[in-house]
Structures are given as C-alpha cells and as structure tokens.
Image (cartoon, rainbow, N blue to C red; front, side, top):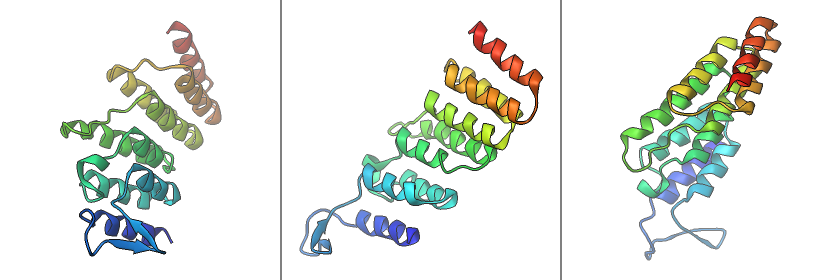
Length: 173
C-alpha cells in the first residue's frame, strides 16, 4: 500500500548512518532514501499522496538537503494532476523553491508542457493561456509541444478562435 511506502521512506530517512541499530528489510541493509526511492513512491501515488511526499521532501524530512525535490520529482507530481488548478499549485511550488538557495527548481519547458497538457485533458483554454504566459514571463520561450497542447485544449473545448490564435502565435515565434 502506498501509505506504507511513504511511512517506510520516513523510516529510512530516520537512519543516521551505519550503526549497530541499522535497519534491515528482508535481510537487506537499508540506507536513507535517495531521489530514485522518493520518485518511485511518487510514481505509485495519487495526486494527494504525491503532494504529501513532495512536502516531506521539501521539508527535508526524507534525507535533508541531498533529497530536496529536483525537476523530475516535481514533474512526476505534475503528472498526477487531474485539473489545471492542481498544476498551477505545483508550478507555484516550483517557483517558491527558489526561496531555498540550495534546491531551487524553476519550472522548465517540460514542466509547462505537462501543465498545458493537463489543460488539454480538462479542455481549459484559459489555463492553457495562463501557462503559456507564465512560461514567457519566466524566460521560457514556448515551443511546438506547448503550443500543440494549447491548441488541443482549444479544439477540445470547441474554441476555434483560441486554437487559431495559438497557431498564429506559434508561427510568429
């Protein structure tokens, strides 16, 4: 069960190096979790559980500074989103990660593409516009993948005008 995997990550993180009280699981010595372990658990999670693991990592409770969330971790959580509001929250968390001088993870083209793809699935044209604008505001030039997802969001919601606007904007860039 995923909740047990999350608790196991916390247990692993509580290990303070090799000691006479080291942890064994099925006769295998267990060390503090690494990014792969954290990302594997996130992969098995639903959105709320993934956000909990992300929060634990941001708080340093899954192994300290070495296990602060990286871009892949944030993008895995983005892949768990079902609506654009959730994607906005994750992108916001990525922006806020800049507060921590160590571990700053600004959103990338991939992050924005994933967010706009969520808008496509939700047929939410306004949120797709928001993410395109946010990408530009943060120095990321939207690419064909971002525009393609935005066009799909517009066509899915039968907004031909928006689809043509996105196409024109893509061609102009």
